[in-house]
Each structure stands twice: as C-alpha cells, then as structure tokens.
Image 1 (cartoon, rainbow over the protein chains, first blue to last red):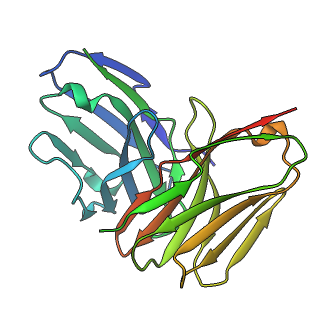
Image 2 (cartoon, one colour):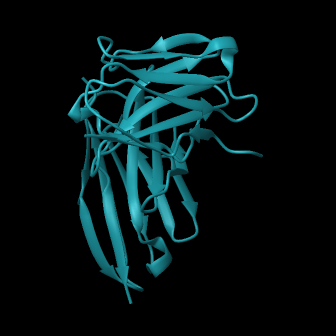
Length: 113
Length: 109
C-alpha cells in the first residue's frame, strides 16, 4: 500500500513569513495526526483529526498555527507568521482508527531564517 | 499532565550484547507504542502494548508493559549493527499522545 505522502520535503523561509504543509494519508485511514519534531526531541502532537473533525488540538499554538482536513482525506497545516522556534520537522501520520498504530510520512523539514 | 521519560537517552553497545531501554510514564495509560527512527527518516511502528503484562517480540527486540508500575521495557538481545537507530516510546491516554525523548542506540562491531 502507498504510504503517507507529505510535501514539500524541505522549506526555508524568513521569520514572519507564512508556510503551508500538505499531507495525504494512507487510503482508508480515518485518523490523521500532525506532529512537530524539534531536533533531538520526540515528536509533539499538534492536532489529530477523525475524518474531517478535530479530535484534539490542545497542543496547537492557535495564534499562529492552523490545520484543516477537508473532505476527511488530505490535510494542510499552516503557520502564519513563522517564528524562529518553529524550525523543526513536521510529521504527518495516519491510522485506520483512533488509537491504532500510526504510519508516518517522511516529514517536512522547516528552517526559519 | 501525561509525561513520558525514557532512559538511557544514549546507548552504545557492542554486537552480541543484551540491553534494555526503559520507558516510564506519569499517569494512567490505555496504550503504549514503540517506534524506531533511522537518521533522516520517519518513524516506523514496532509494537503496540494494550494491557498489563503484555509482551511482544519481533526478531531481537522484545517489548513488555507493566501498567501498575507505569513502565515499559524494550529488550535487545544479541545486538547487531542494523539495530542502530533512535527508539521512541509513546504513551496514549484517551486522545492525548506523548512521546519520550528517544534513546539513540549505536551498535558497534
């Protein structure tokens, strides 16, 4: 089966600019997750969707981060405006249902100058 | 708040030796996962443990869960170079999911 697809793989922007990441989960997977992984740390869950509804976004910095999952398939994560501390790898994952093992994409490495 | 601690954070071991990675968590959990991450790559699911006393094995890796002690272990038997990677435990409680900081394992010949 095709894995979780993410794009772009790399992005370099200046602080205060905006950026968006795209994720296409494994076909049929109802649950989609966005994580932030800072170098040397474990992934931090930002938001999780069940179909097109938000299950949990308690760790999403809502003043600058937003995410949507239209039609319950693809998802986008946006940062506006970016700060230096947002430099990280942004991982998308999907699972068949909530609480099932997650399949991760290769991530988007974001560098803020 | 759910907190997850892994130790050690760095582990260098020789091929053929055995070792254990520990994962402690702070509150009741209903599931625990182990993932592997190779440098520059994404995470790969290794095990999911759902109940007290659960034990799962795959090749040279064996994971166990003690929910009363809030502790999971990942045991490595007769390590080989291919096991060099970073290993994460992740703990779930309802819709919350927290990862440990990871254990960077290096297996030397």
